[in-house]
Image (tube, rainbow, N blue to C red):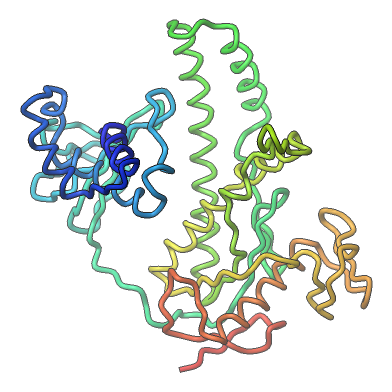
Length: 377
């Protein structure tokens, strides 16, 4: 459905025309009389696919939206009508849900529903099927956070999260044994024929390792974000564009890139630490705690001294050691960068330029080099 609707939009754009969601949704109803495969799927699921495509085309343009590959895309579809969704709990570990054209589906109950169901999303991670419910819990963002302290957070490739109060959190998401096994499975996969049963088994084993890695990363990001948002009223982070930062250095045929191998290793390290996942988790939990998440420019935060504010590339002696060439201040490099992020975040907050995710309901201020931010009415 995605590829068919995207192809139609691209053809319209090449002719200088435009087609929107309403017109495509109307044509979908007529197409069901001709194509049996469209009748097999629930109508709301197909409409939600067109709606997601419409949002992507408006943000990026129809010619820049990517196709969905059968081999690479993990299926996910959404049921938006709560009147057609019925959820029942059968016991401590099991429940069932009734979905349009699916009927009753048995599920493992991993989390209780603390509110009315608004929608349901069914997804496949390569190994198992999952269903998640969007619920109305009735909770609102507090006007003021319980704490007035502020911290800066530096995300790195050696230490995942370094805080301005010298706290550092890190975790390895793949064990050494899993890394060896995944490498052997890759070598085994290269020798197998496409479409064979053994190849499918190898891919399933590789996906199982990847799933454990993703679960550990998601757990780490959610736990760390919850710790920061619960303790502090303002959290300053660097404004990273992770997708642009992890782009390949191969370049084009006319302008080939340099140090492609080094850039590829850096990209893997950035993606492994989950920079963007941590930012999303922090913004999500801040809706329940009232924490202000402030994004500051990342330029020179690792080269600037947090005491005398001098900027010198030579201040960074190594990945972990920072020594100011002007005043001689010595600190862990990531902690020094976090202190600079905190100072920039307090300056941005004092000017009223908060992050787009947060409304300006309180304005922490104070000494940029301190760790507390008194609330101003």
